[in-house]
Amino acid sequence: MSLVRLNIKGISYSQTQNGAYALILNEVDGERKLPIVIGAFEAQSIAIALEKEIRPPRPLTHDLFKNFADRYEIIIKQVIIHKLVDGVFYSSLICERDGIEEIIDARTSDAIALALRFKAPIFTYKNILDKAGIYLKVDSSKEENEDENNVLVEDIVNDDLETNSSQEDYKLQTIEELNSMLQQAVIDEDYEKAAKIRDEISKR
Image: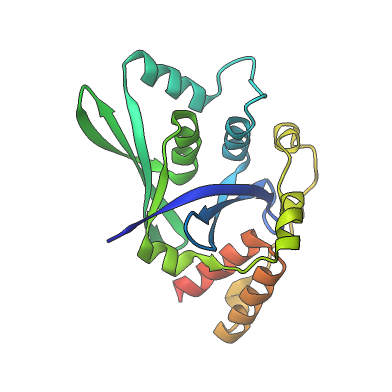
């Protein structure tokens, strides 16, 4: 199976789940986006790694892992999102020490937080992107304003904004209704909602 490289597009607030965020990964040589729902702590850690100017006074968990790995000369060569089951993404860290390569299982949010700290590339398999990716053509004018939808690092660090805790019960919807809702969520660029609808469709 062929690997597809991904870049981090941004982090958005969850519109349906209190305290959650949607991490948006972008296909490097394409226009598909892969939304992944992550927790507040992981969102904070990823946002801090993306924003080079912000350095926490004490190491976060992922910083501690990086310091530990550096001390024992362990490097993370790449991260692979290798499986998708019932809306849950599974990832692996490809590590190397003394020329010996090891594969370590990890949550996708943790794997990406570490990939940023090790400057390691992020990949997924083409069949996963075909199944879970959202294809979206973006106008150049919208592309310029797209960053306005991304969460500011300070917002995640402070986390003092209220989120909408109302959750739609997608289980009551038909497949046709879900597909229509998915298309509307993509048009609205509500990737976190689109991911949840996509996951419900996949379960059926």
